[in-house]
Image (cartoon, rainbow, N blue to C red; front, top):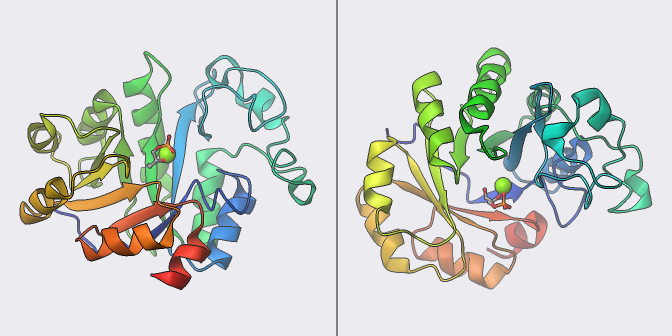
Length: 246
Ligand code: G3P
Ligand code: MG
């Protein structure tokens, strides 16, 4: 599948993770205020099967102490404060459900790269649950979300369950089989890490008609270089710095 739209050059990582607590409603509002038109965020499942927007499989770093997302109900997760670790101004932020995030993005007019980040053994279930919410609630006013994952089983489930939504393959180190994987999963985009990225891969992916989004690029010089080399989008914690200097 080809991407049915042009990616914005700058996508806010987990909202605007360098400026506001990652993957929170306040973070998405801050990303919009800083001028991005799209954000990236991570989706995983609570123990009772609610798709929630959170990065780590454990709540220790961002939500007030240890606790596995996959072992807690959404009601238990929602009791946690997911903002005060970042700064007192954000006290009271919650780990949002995907449903709440979609509503907020609609209000803010923000498009999204939705990363499926399943706990071990839950790839298909996480993808199907997330896509059910997106299919039911994603507003017509926004471009369809771009679904990405490091997990190929999750992408295959997305392909089966919501073939109309574009998919992107996330990779830390570009694997030998990246061309086959993109073809097999009918992906529209490749999402390599900036670390050790070979620009020949970008050239080849672009020549073959794929979009390329590189994460996590926080240095404006590097962003300029990558965008000049044909990368479509950089995913950044510091969207204001990048937007100002590219
Ligand atoms: O989607 C890009 C980036 O978010 C992938 O890495 O660990 O920050 O989710 P991570
Ligand atoms: Mg992510």
